[in-house]
Image (cartoon, rainbow over all chains, first blue to last red):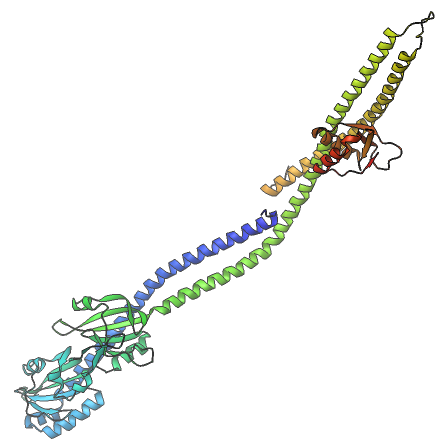
Length: 457
Length: 71
């Protein structure tokens, strides 16, 4: 299929604009993908730092509360007097108001005097932190608490849960809890250690920290112990919190004390996530902090920008065509006009060429007729008998030859008339040809101006 | 066979027709237009009556409009 000049010019413009926008959209998408990826990583890193801030803040809060309990005059007196009932009342009040999961006071031998959760008085509290506190050290750390430690505090049910994988199958059972704990020595008026206070927050199914972090930072946060999420703001498809759920991404790095940054899928949603190890005061990894932003946020930005680019590209295409079509029309009209001029001139010049050839042929035919007539006349002159007066005597043969010569003469006359007409015709056409040649020069100049954009001098 | 006269709308067409017939092997002779023929051209072509069909075919092939034929 042959396309016209208009279709070719407009097609070229449309093609060029489309290629421009496709290349631009691809380049923008690729650049945006890299930039968004980098921006996303920075966003997640800073979110993770923020989450760590909330974690540290809660740990300091636990430390502050236990230390305040340790220095309260009434508490110190009651510890000296081993007033279990009074201490229990005071500890319950503090734990409830401050949101501590447990708060326990032991005597100088490590035996429980009172618990915020009640019961267990007289039993030895076997905790490394209590031992350190009784030696005068104030301890504040994240740690793992076993069922043996949590049961006396009536906290075992809080960690008792099945760990399930993505498909809902049980993969294990929680046997330890993650906690922020603090222990501080209690001294008498002579500054001798008479006991210790030990308190903390059990993080399993405790959502204050993750909720605060997510509200302030915008992403999702979670706390992980033993490859299981024990607290999070990640939602399942049904809207419930994702907890007691198995997770594997980045866990090998965490066990090695390193952070993990990358894509992680939780509850069927892809997140750009940062996972950091949680260390105890001995720099041992006890758990992990997970912070992530849904990857769809970045993909949505990318898709929206690409769509906008294509939409604006389409609008640009329409505007470009609206501007280009009149120009193409004008150029096409100018070229078509010149083309018609060339075509008509060529036709006229072709007639002149053909006319010259035909005229030549006709002159040749006429010359042949004249020669034949000359031969006939010569034949009469040489073969006809002559009279005594020197005139040609007529007989039948001579008469026929004269008749033939006469017919030939008539034909030659016609030929001469034709030659005359041809000469007139060709003369007119030759004059016309001069005009046409000038027109062709004009066309050439016009086309040159059209192509080069320069006006001829 | 007696000659037939082919006439056209212009002298230019008559000349082009002469060339076309020559190229296709039909002998044609240019003659002044007879008084009986009505056409703007003042030249016509005379061909042998036997070559009429091949002449008309050659002119059709060369895309030349034939004004008429006088027998």
